Length: 471
Image (cartoon, rainbow, N blue to C red; front, side):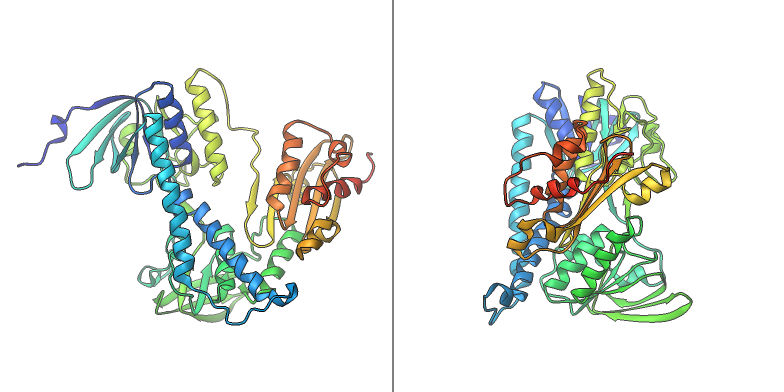
């Protein structure tokens, strides 16, 4: 039987067609399908996107296992013997896989309950608001939507270094599937993915070296945060090489690799058994026919959108990483709310919204609002209060006293400008301050609150009590 020609396949009409089942796209689909709209979601591989399959949740699963392992290494501190302790990486991996399988089941149930049609296949635009789907081992379908949502996400960027392609470096995807502890892991990149996985894999027994091209890890943050994170990793035996310019890679990850580079003009060589590429993300916008849909890209390859997440093509929207939104699942979730409101005739925008984040090293680093560095760059005057985590009594019961809390408050009012937490439960503590910021509450509300003793948020009373008086 001959191949079906594209022009003989009749387009199927939908109210909404979503390309990619990531955070923003799937919630748009579920929401509109529940309202009676005819919705189709096209997904090439990962049901629910990268977060439940290969990124956020699986990585935090491995990180928690590594945290448990760290308690074994510290066991004498708690009066517990660690005799015969060893790491079974297959067990580590299987725990993660079991969680992922459960999450996929939840997503499939959500698609069924909502009425949104999930189509597994590779989607490509062939004309405005029209997508051709190549089905696995079968014929193609053509879908046309009154509205189309691009939710294709991003992938790990690969550095263009001689020998890098042949080295077959791990990305976070392969790193989370390791069934043996690497002998020595070389991590390229000192950002979120690199630091989280470097510490976790170190705690599981590997020797680890982080190679960063900038002068410091997470170099855009405040100096006290940078110094704390770097010293924490070094205490755990992780080697850190900054200002590193790589010019060649030899060997293959898994059997043996060698990095050739220079630091401050001095050549160096690094050898390891495994190589992890964690030096940024690139949007999944190539090879999907966006030019045929009238959808323009930015210089960085993201879909060009306005503050309402509309693309340059009428009736086509983009959400999440591929649209250049901050690369966090919670931001992609908010993108879905922006699009849903605008499809209903609203005027919701992405400008001015809060973008909290948390680095899930141990201890965690979380921030909302301005850092000191950003405030100074913008000429924003502020009052500063800072306390050590040891001043939060709950940390002493946990033997987790490292880190600090820091807040920036307006000099002439009690408006909270920014909050930073480095320590145990940093993300949860930050959420308390964020709620106050969302509500426009003065810092005195947190200072005068009654928090349960002993809990971590109780430390906010001490923090805000240490603020200098208003000007």
